[in-house]
Length: 198
Image (cartoon, rainbow, N blue to C red; front, side, top):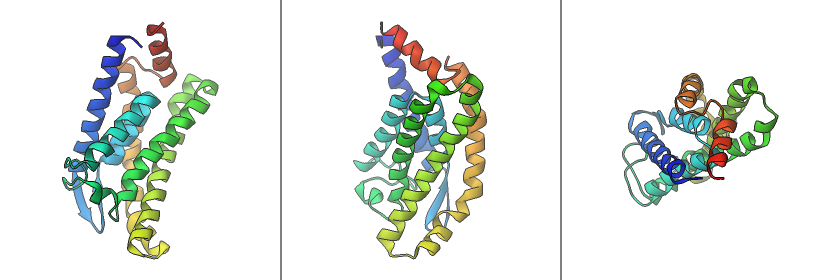
């Protein structure tokens, strides 16, 4: 990867961290888990960036929040948030991004352009959301002692429709943004970066 490509990746990662922070700042508190736009931003990041960029962006966001920057929901920061009742959702963001990137790397070469922009993107969205729900709910149960059924009622059911709408918006927006960045598909962007580094 040449200097221009590396600089562009750094800028995209920085912008993605900022988007996650902005998404967290837009909050509606209903029950123990706030509604934010983080899911929308997370899905966009995973769909648009290369796997390495996506993991750096999501990991960087968590690290910056963990050291105390007020970039989590409610303008909070620090390890206390990550280890608090809702911290599992934040960890689930990274796990979801990791699993989605692995899925993309596994299936990208077998997917046609049509499949990449549709079926693979849908699969990635489902993986990201499932990981966030699973880790978030499991940690909520562990840290609060709430019954699983009650935790699902509090942490998952109220968010299914809003998250589906956010996921749909991310799905619709991702392809035009990829085209604008010269990344009509992830494979194209990955190959381009590889060629530039030769």
